[in-house]
Image 1 (cartoon, rainbow, N blue to C red):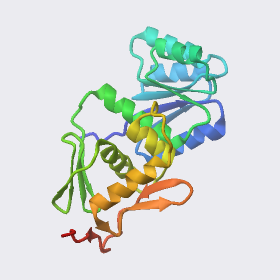
Image 2 (cartoon, rainbow, N blue to C red):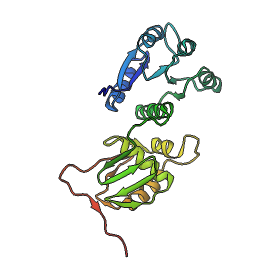
Image 3 (spheres, rainbow, N blue to C red):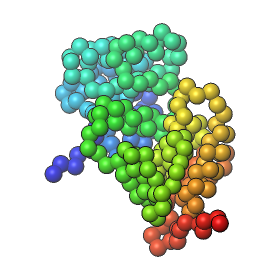
Image 4 (spheres, rainbow, N blue to C red):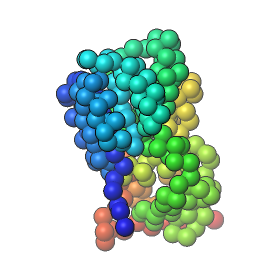
Length: 241
């Protein structure tokens, strides 16, 4: 049975940023194609169509808009996530009108880009039979039925707490900033403060009732989900009378 990794093409003319995105994507389980200009990307993507393209707008030879337009004209364009330093509404609208699936402005967090890539692929695959239940550190999360259990004990979470837990468990060992968690759990249009995440995480830890908690604070940054090592102790705290 084929177990090939999903392929993401990164089209970015800044070498350091191109390699940084590649490293994050590979760490997340993707295979990566790298291109440094629009002409090479257009030829490469046409020859070997990836699952998704991360496409910078300001490129030499052909800009990202032109690459996107030509791929769309082919009729077999993969999903596209645009990267650009341009922040005007007209640029954002142009990219979306040309068929881009999402749009990220520089500077950005590479971890956030990975999360957006995964979200786009989930959307376009439309319920493909991928595993949606996972158990880590005694916590079982069923994303399809929106259920959580700790050592077989059902735990009732708010929608925001559920999304926070899911985001953290999808990235064990990764530090996610408060803003990344806020964007992922509440939405990028939410006008709130990133410190609100602290309240949600505190409630989440209390409801999970694990000692020690696998959700660790990275002071001044955000939170990280670190499952205990094999042989370590992790159990539910006694229930209050």
